[in-house]
Length: 361
Ligand code: DAH
Image 1: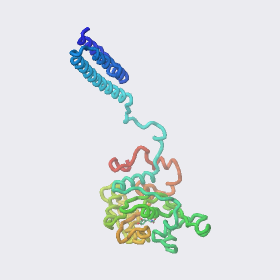
Image 2: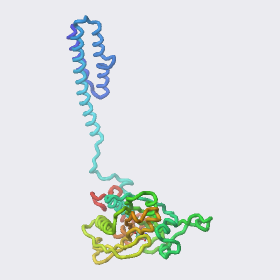
Image 3: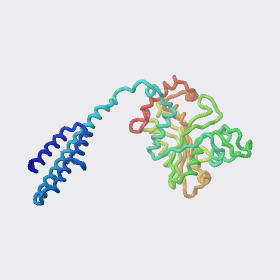
Image 4: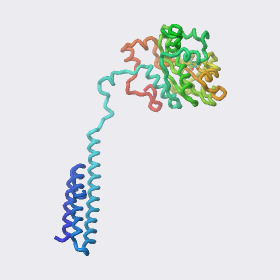
């Protein structure tokens, strides 16, 4: 056999093997047998040494040509097989997202309105650049009151109906007095102590007061907001709360009333009412939150310079805004763990509130 026929016979054989490879493992085996270290093409190339000098060049070129063509054919077949494998996998893993949720926990379970409303609020403030901060339910008297410009003997302390923790303060070697936090405002202090301005946080959580009737429970939920930087002013506070109310109540317009008020940790302080038209009951003003410009004493209590830094804060009852938005009549039912109530007022787990997709689904 001449060199030429030998080479073309091998090419024909290899191309047939390549065409016959049925899957990616098969094509890899063909590649190794053809071009691998001990493959048939290198083996043929090794015969070069035994040839007379004047034939080597032509032989070498011919074998190299063979190597290139076999290499290309391998690539083409491999790509074909890969496409085929992907198509088969896609066909096997197909999911029909239009099918209803299968019966089971995901279908039966309900998200509590307080969780739902917190997710909605977080979505709105998240969009405005706020992040989420947290603090403990058992808080020091110092952070819950003193650093918020409510010193011992301040009358505001009485209004809070505080639960004091046993075994703290004088009861135990003057250990720090601990309380069940009466509001989420101590998270303002924790945040300012822990991070440098600019600060933009919301802080949700449980709060506790000794109080119980149709609109008060010993435990309820608040959400705190805090913005501290070098330039945020009352106008920003009003804009921010207006945008929040429109987004939260999912209405284009909302009438709001900012009433002068007093909180020790803000100056000036305002209570904010909304016209209940936003929830389909025009003509009634509903108080929804307290707010104000953070008091300079609070800023300096956290080691920041009140000449340089300023900002605003607000606090609202999560349960209260949930009751308003979703027409829930009695606050106590929120925490009664009655499944019938939850089935009625709860939200499906898969319906996640987003600004784009709608907050309340
Ligand atoms: N902490 C207040 C309360 O529980 C609510 C509040 C009012 C929070 C004004 C604030 C604020 O941040 O600026 O009654």
